[in-house]
Image (cartoon, rainbow, N blue to C red):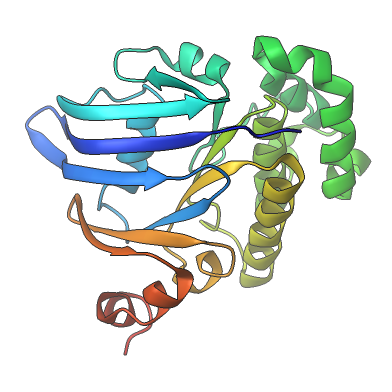
Amino acid sequence: MANSDNSITIERIHAAYSAVRVLDDVSLTVGSGETVVLLGTNGNGKSTLMKCIMGMVRPYQGLIRARIDGQTHDLIGMTTEEIVDLGIAMVPEGRRLFPRQTVEENLLLGASRRLARARIKDNLDFCFELFPRLAERKNQLAGSMSGGEQQMLALARALMASPRILLIDEPSVGLAPVLVTRTIDAIKQLKEHYNLTVLMAEQNFTQAIRIADRGYVIVHGRIAFAGGSAEELNNNELIREFYLGL
């Protein structure tokens, strides 16, 4: 699948819930074909930033632009449905599956985007190839699956939208270490197969850095550090203090 130019630019975003300020002057970029990680412990604004990109939270100041197949779109003011239809998909924190629907039904619901409908069979085949457990359990109710299986399903459902840009919010939450490793490996595989642009919010630094090209650290709603490479992130004092206990 060709990827001409699919990127995100966020400039000086401010966002709040009522009187509580959550994001304060946040700027970041995700270049075409990159995997960028947004690192931060709970409550520092990672999920809010993802929701701003998806139109679920409206910033009161700043710009969010996406280039999709070389065309620039101003996301501020667009509905979530319009943003998904452009080719931006999100795997939300907590997975947010339809628990009383089967695995296959959840996957088909992911293909609501107009351009994805023609690719349902190819995308379904790839999801089942990447996650054989989902193929084995395609008729099982999503709510009866383990946490690791549900995370696989959440990733696969996002792929069914044939996205150009994929946002992944806290993929490691609630998973055993071995399942976190498998999930991060799967993100790398699907990113390479579809040549996606990926922004991943994560607090598991050790796992995130395995697949990240570069990243940002967010502290109290502000970008505290921007690392131009995985190596820069690994050698940063802030990260050594917050994540590695050094």
